[in-house]
Image 1 (cartoon, protein in one colour):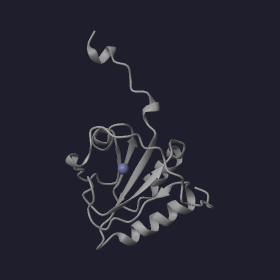
Image 2: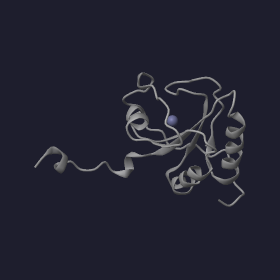
Image 3: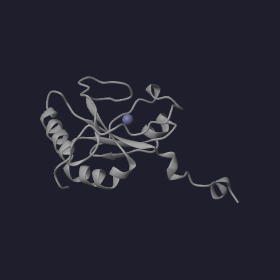
Image 4: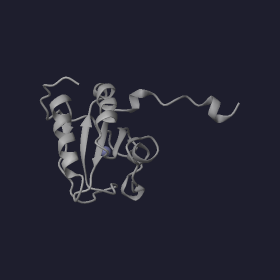
Length: 140
Ligand code: ZN
């Protein structure tokens, strides 16, 4: 048998939370990003991060982060597929390896963008989902 056949799959327990990074162009698509942000906040218990109008960390475009618990994934991610307004969104798990989370294991909604590996540590402290800062009142 090969190593591949003998290996155990990684358990779901490795994932402590998720991020969605919503990318936009400050010159042309900020209105769409603003509208999407409002829509998310009205509908999902998530943590909306601040606006990064310039490239930051491994990210190649302006963006904001949406942090969310595992329990939110099943509704938020399909909803984003339908409502991303043409924006690129990177959705990645948070495990102990930020580099693998962002580069190897993410999913993209919309057009994939470059992610800069040199800005991502191989290992890091696990990140639990922070307390939501939204007060959802609308149905999805
Ligand atoms: Zn992230």
